[in-house]
Image (tube, rainbow, N blue to C red; front, top):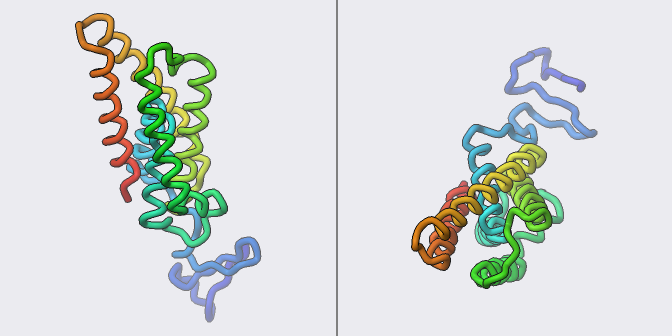
Length: 191
């Protein structure tokens, strides 16, 4: 890195750094660091993908189409998620998943293929969420993927135990899980 001081003054307010051919002042550095709250939000959003795989990306698209990203250029994927049409398609996919989840014979979320899909969707959603907020995507992807594994395993265990051990109808447990996924997802997407 090449650092230059204006007039010989090395004050951090006027310090500049040459990055990739562009001069940036110290307060313009990108990406910004993840805070503990950011990491928690990524973990929760990933866990929501473990409960309902499409819900997090649908919530992110809805938020971005309504409010836009925090950065000017987040890349083509962020641009795609800001589209109201994409937000609508993802919302419909999330609704379809809610219905499919209640159908008897649906494959368990902890089976290898569904679990892999949840991990990929959770990690991708959290990476895009991080980018949209001006943070690096790699930490969001990792934390979101881990959250998806935890959400899948815990959700499956709780749902299975409640359905078998108590006379609680499976549909009731599924509806409570839907509400939990929706609430946690909305909290995690907040700015």
